[in-house]
Image: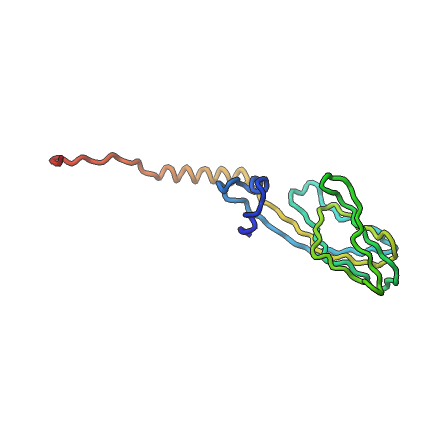
Length: 173
């Protein structure tokens, strides 16, 4: 994990507890959970969202879309509705699946920031969407831990002995 910290931007390092290496970064935890949903004629859309109060960074990494049992030989177009860099909502088709020629599509960890809505734009499915929900949490140092750290630094300062001047030897020039 320490090697990945070297690639953080200045704002991430500041949030992690230090800039320029003056303080050691706060502990970073990364959790990964399986994600899956199914779109069909009965369920034409699915929205993946997280709690807004959550301070963690969430990423939805899609791995595969595939037609499942009961699919007809028709075009099944799946689109993703998300926000772009200007925070405007955009809809982008990500797959056009057909049982006879392309029943599945690998997305190789296509990463999206929640909230994300998946829509079955055409076809009746069923289409299975799979991936990973990744959660990155940067633990902040609490005030209590900071005061304990300052006290231990003060204790270390008290243990330092003063530097005394050198003694002069009589009889030597």
